[in-house]
Image 1 (cartoon, rainbow, N blue to C red):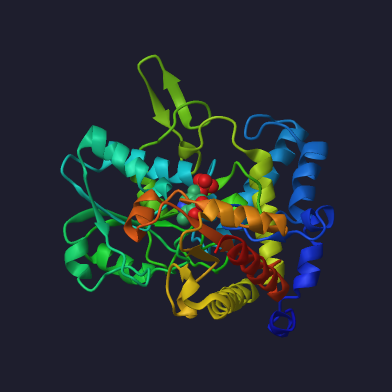
Image 2: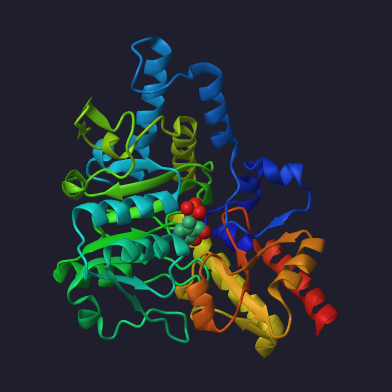
Length: 414
Ligand SMILES: Cc1ncc(COP(=O)(O)O)c(C=O)c1O
């Protein structure tokens, strides 16, 4: 790098040693963290320790183990809340299965308690399906109207006419970072305009939180969703943060145990926050694992993580561009400072799956497909892209390996 990045605080070799997957897969060049990151030993140990020494169901028992499990689970909530600078972690952090479930919670709850037929909901053309389909389902059974902010040739949102875009909107829901283009959106600018127009603002931070510090009290959102497995945590855990004043007014999404204070034959009384939104036995070990992931990120330092993200995104963009010039189409901003996390590309005439396969023969793991963003794929005029995505365990050698494997791909197919 390793020099480059070490000089700027992250010691990639040391970080890599924290992730057993690399020792267990010698030579692996893992460039698919946008789909799911790897896990450090600290996260594996936190979950293992919980299961070995402290497991019982939470919130229900008065015996020691149940209290220990509850303490670990609620402790994770508290630490994740502090990681986001939430004003009231113990009320504002809601655990869900992933961002998809968190966004479904938002759409369904707002659909039951707030939105009416004909109401305008604004999304963007660069959303992941997780932030499109729940609203389209709402449109089908409630008749809300969805409008999409357009995307320009540089993979950026077209917001020249922002005031009229958000005018009359009841909800504006958008990503903070595109999982395909790597574009970091002007989220706060859009959020402020949307708030001025009286809309509820929802942020999909699934690709943002793994690389950038977030302060939910200043970002401009009312609700923020993200997923644990892209930020070194386990699968099966996601987070919805929301302002407690808003969450208090939103009706529950899933019904069952834990989310009530009383149930009679003719109805129920919903529990207080955050339990109102956590029906059934929660993902206890997963929440504890995500708490450990957040501790791990803090131990590296969010400034250093962001710096690394900016450097490696720039390096990958520039090196691939320099090696292949007009032979390769790189999607998203040509200004590397506007990119985060990933590099999507195509060699004209070569299917991205073929690219990914040749790369795999060189132990370079990238994703090929529509990346759960089919409307964006249609907008870009492609069925799929190949996407290399990065994290703190990737360094210049990984970018070199990508470029070399891409040379082999080009020589083979073109
Ligand atoms: C921007 C964005 N939103 C939402 C999701 C959905 O995440 P999950 O599948 O963990 O719910 C992803 C996953 O790729 C994503 O990149």
